[in-house]
Length: 267
Image (cartoon, rainbow, N blue to C red; front, side, top):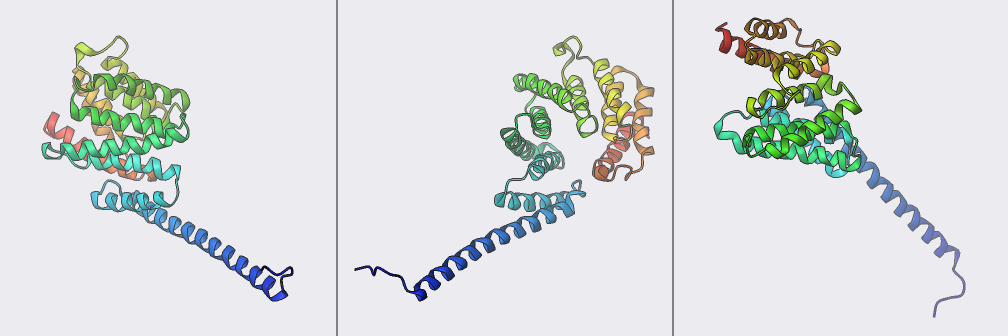
């Protein structure tokens, strides 16, 4: 039979038990927070070297471990970008499946962002960008249905944040126009329209080198060889660290510009 009164000793023991339980819970929360912060810092430390495959792998691994502890919009966007890089850093016919898998992972992380907020600009843009790269792997005919969605997403980003990623949606649309066979291009989606889009991006951010790479490709296909050469050469005049957060992009684009000049002009 339960006693009618609880002794002072029993009350004290119950209080101590409750305090101990609370401290254990708080300790666990603090431990998880510390672990998350440590893993995020580990990924952040090598994010600037994402153009190096080994460093990118370390970055992705750290971010994915951190994401298992807590959802984070910055990590989600960087993982989407990171897998885009991962795919691009595996060129060649033997790596087609690796690229396709990477771009699909990039889309998955981007869609987690838009699931949280349908108007998340990073989510919309990197979903479209990874999708465009995936479509490039499977071919125009197999990806025809996706191209319309990609263009819609790019235009939505322009409405939400016109120059996101230093003219990202303009470059994406222009690249889609450039990559679409001439007989499939719609009115208002020709090469000159693509050039206008990229020049718009460059009017706002003249030091983002990828814009010059895409513009040079458009000029070359238009037969504007002098403009193409000048555009590729412009990349080499821009200091690598002019925009510290995009130094990885600049290093990549400087290599690409040199390759284009050698391929097209024998320089």
